Image (cartoon, rainbow, N blue to C red; front, side, top):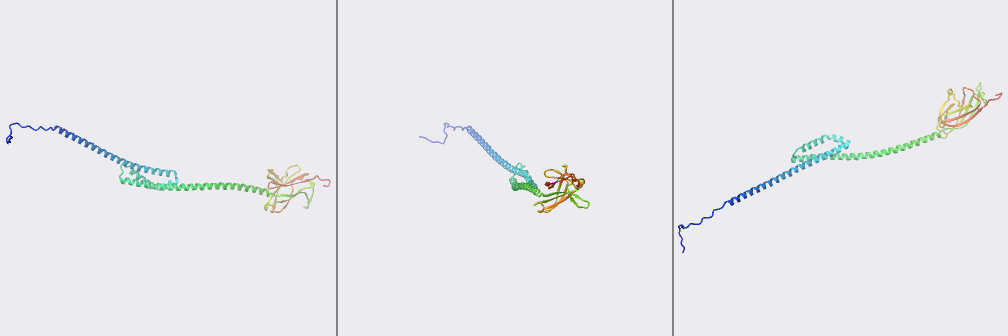
Length: 326
């Protein structure tokens, strides 16, 4: 039967085991280490994300600035191309050079900065757009000038062709005209007919007596008729060439003899030049007396008549020695 008492038992009681904190400490240290390492890892990842974002932002800004620079450079290339190939447009650009130079200066000033604010970037975009608008306007002028130039070239080509045709036509017309004038000139040469050579002795009383005795002849009366249907009315010269019995032309410069040009025989000596008042469409009778400052010789005298360089008639008359009563 068991009994209970409030007195302590005389027999020793068992002690609780001592707690071992070593593992706890190690665990706590490990947890702390892991936490620190995790924080460092997280922080490092965070910094890498920030750096990546910053680099992306920097890259974006650089790309935007590069694009602005490219747009600006493209506009300058377009402008240089226009002014370099069109002198007329170049003068137009020079008139606006102040505006263009101001725009280029403002754009270069903005693009020279390392970093652009949004406002500066917007301003650069607007300025480049304005520059491109001016270049586009100039390109339209170039297109118009090119079209005008092409039209002018076409007109010039047409005018040149017309001029060449006119020149050819004029040359042909001139040649035809000259040919016609030559034909008319030749055709207007007078024709001589009824040629007569009458040897005369002019007596002291002024009366003439026909004779064939050479020593009594002191003048030759030469007569002929001239006509031509197309020759114009007016005065013209007829050349009379007399060849003596010795075969030599009779020429007395003191009496008006000289030389003239023929169409077929070259220069020829003439004895007398006889002016003829010709009336178109009518026959004209011509007569003149040839007196020379020497005696006439016996033999045949040949008379040739020329007009317009052509021989138009010829006649012969013989002067005889004469008899006892000659």
